Image 1 (cartoon, one colour):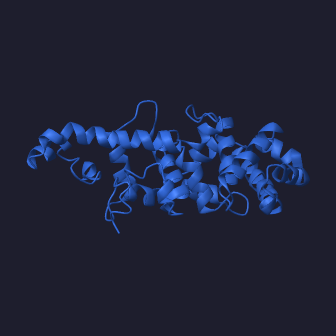
Image 2: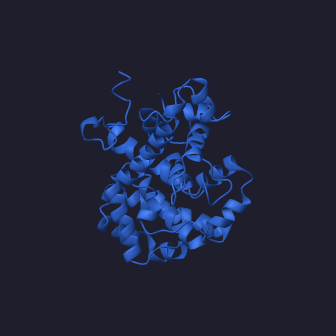
Image 3: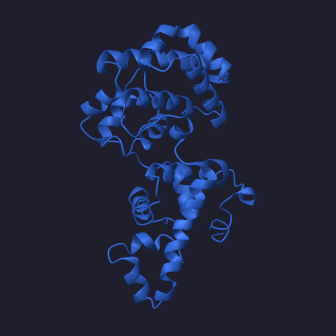
Length: 265
């Protein structure tokens, strides 16, 4: 039985579905099975990247949100996750974690930090873009991303304002940044990335015909894990999609027993 039945039957409840299908004895097992799969997913793959970096977004504090914005910019390039994390740590070590500090560090200083973090492939272009972004952030929003959020009319406008900083921020970076702010910013509601959708379908959380975001939110609503939020669930799916599903590393995948990828072939 596919896990996405949870979503399909939400209108009447899973208890109703199992009773109607004469499967009531399996109800408690099914409910526990889905929750166990989600628990295993987050435990094995990890949750929010921001938390891994020691960034606390829960209170919506501007300085913490900026740290995640900087990290998202580093994650947004076609570069390994480990290199992006190492480079963020270098910014952290140098105390360059604010718009003012980035501008003060200057292009040469930023290139050095990026190189020391292993970000050499994109050092020149990233240093240039960071300075341009900081200038606009200071000029239009007093260096405060919370102010940018306040000024946005809606979800789409929020994404457009972010993309308009400097000479532009890409869709990938914006998606990474907003994904972990869903429970913090009212207008942060990006569509799940293709990697999230791929992993979710392989695990049977959603079908090919369902709208991914609403379907995943409904699954999480029914199977919430204590101490975690939807962004942890989404981040774990992203990690699975990026590190295993996309690369077809089925033999080494920690979710191999739960995955329906092979069964679908």
